[in-house]
Length: 293
Image 1 (cartoon, helix red, strand yellow):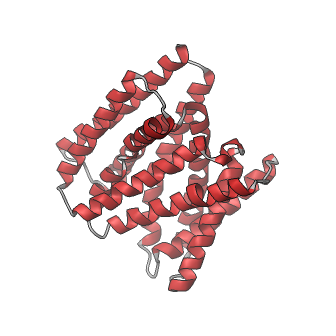
Image 2 (cartoon, one colour; image 1 turned 45 degrees about the horizontal axis):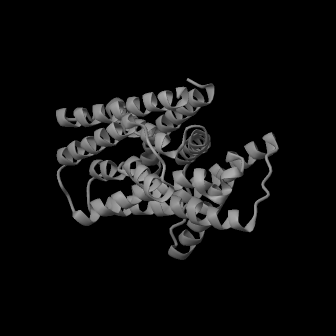
Image 3 (cartoon, one colour; image 1 turned 180 degrees about the horizontal axis):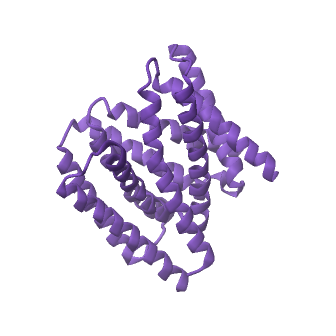
């Protein structure tokens, strides 16, 4: 296996694990008295923007972009990020958190469909097996949580497609040639501006406590790290592979729920998570075979 492939897989696994831990901190932030979701997003993206800006300056990355790159960053960077997070939160009003998460993780399949139809990308046969395993896993998880509101499920699936678009853009948008940390800086800063304007208009800003600030800073640092690693992973192994490896995220969420909330999955849910893990293994083998060819 080529060293770049190994790096891409490792980066993607680490980022998925971090993404799986961040919701634990989000729960602590949003459960605080007087906290609002949009207000907390402002603080989190403010911290994230500062962190990534310090990193960009330390490494002396260029922040120069073209008009076309700025446009794509607005649409596929900040736009896709806000689209994804907003729809996912809206879906919680209709269906349970577990069901929304299961529907959201349709996006590895969505990425493959988009890449095949729009960009004529060909996949290793093991990738098609991974798609089947992922779909089977989602069916099992949706069944285990119970079929909820169809509207809520569609909204959650759309949030996943939004995130899939975000991943594909790192590979296909005009800003694909930018250094990944610079790209993340623009995504963070543009998203921060949008959430800030919304919070000001809706009057949802609030003053967080010391405990919430700690979790905001910690989760922001994790978010920046995960986003940079995800971007690097896309460059090295492609968005479809990163999308499938990101299935480590819900698996990590399950582990944190067991450790911190003692919420043990049901038998059928274990089968679903096992199929997700199998999908990751199949895609990893496919990447190995592709690079040996």
